[in-house]
Image (cartoon, rainbow, N blue to C red; front, side, top):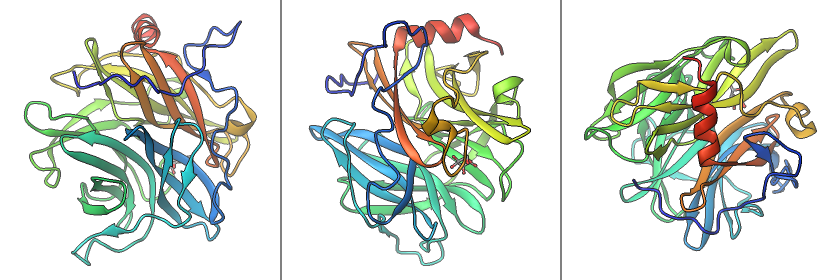
Length: 323
Ligand code: BMA
């Protein structure tokens, strides 16, 4: 199990009187929309442990409302320094190296480097894959799938000797449907052996669902936080819950939360450029303490932090599971 201890994980105990499995950081949002001069909004972003602190790839929509990815660094995972200019991706192939838009990054350590996946504009949304060794130089690898697809999330190790990626086929717009699929690859470039993982259900996850942060390996299965969308008379509402996927056959869902773990209820989740959105893209995990920190976007405007304990999340998924 490749989950090293993370003693410096950002953490705040569950507030007195709170009975939620996932609770919010009291000083949310941790990243305001205007942290850098160029930004309109900074949200749906991903972080990883890096050196003695943390590094991240952030969705920064600029004041022209271009959607792009900027890098950032933090000592404590809470206070971030971010570059004002977007990451420049090195790519030798001009056919795929051009910029249309980039958003909703996920970042992970996989074998020998940090990989980044995101929703990449290439004649419509698809999954871009890039990598960096040092958060200085970034390289674009390929578009993994044909448009239209979003929410591409890699597993942090090969499974059955293949790279594995969750993804969500979509349309070219705001997609009023969507189930989670899984694709497999020998080399992170050629993808196939597609499998259905799970589809929409009632209530908070009735319109569409999509993988959130990189899955965490546990003895009980891959822990996947995922977002679910409900269509209200006022538009989409983005909440998140979690599932446990079989370790060897990760398209097999073992358990799945019947209720959401967090839904947009605070001001910074309900009010912003897109109201009523809580959209998780990263977790940090410290196995010795069971602490989990969840990074999520609030209302497509700011970045927020929530906390949970691994044993409680696993118990909750199992005890509320509805497959
Ligand atoms: C999805 C993506 C996300 C966004 C969400 C709510 O389709 O664009 O980046 O958070 O819609 O607007």
